[in-house]
Amino acid sequence: MGALVTLELPEDSPARDLPWIVTFGPLGEDEEWEPVVCGPYERPHALALAESVVADEDLMAVVELLLPHVTVEEIQGEIAAARMAAEDNRAEVEDAADFGDYDEFALDGPASAEPEQMVEASPPPSPEEVRAGMSRIAARLTG
Image (cartoon, rainbow, N blue to C red; front, side, top):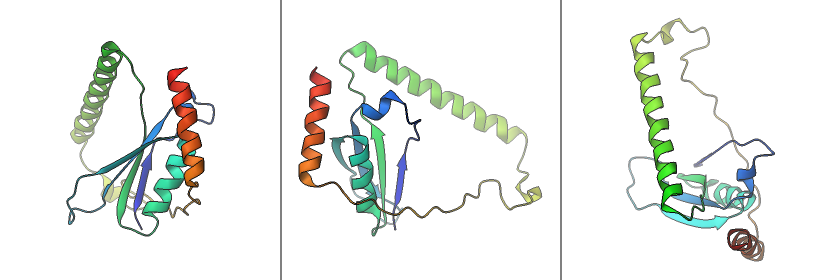
């Protein structure tokens, strides 16, 4: 079974209505090949397709928002925001390192341990449903 990674969004998030892409790649380090990027899709279609593909294979699927920016300034703004977020993350990691590793004192095991979640694959949309979704995306992007 593979892995699926995506953003958790509130039900009322406007980002749910934007186009989404799926990037498939190797799950482990023992395989090396160029990732396959598919889409754009509506979010439910992207998730269902990704779940179906990784259900029985050792692959990773990353379902991510496709930002339809139309100006250089919008793209530069996203790049700046990503850089700031990465810097904030690095600072948090460095701050945490100052306090040492206290996992040995945790009552329920290491703090980094996460319970495995079994995700049951949704049935994939039909090709007709996917094409209809792509048409809706194109209408939103050009409207």
